Length: 81
Image (cartoon, rainbow, N blue to C red; front, side, top):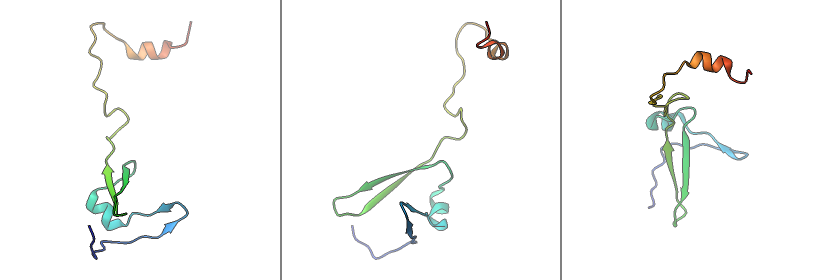
């Protein structure tokens, strides 16, 4: 796949390159997102954006056990004998 189209360009500094603003905005790239890089057989580079889930507990579905819990008491008593 060869094309003369250039959407934006950035300069490499050390081992890092900035993602131009217009590309970040178009792909909705934000802090914490990951980029997965692949080099194709024709030496072209493919980059896939993996958006992070929002918040530290994004995958937490809650406690679904049968026993009643008291998280505040359990937290405060943890490690105390």
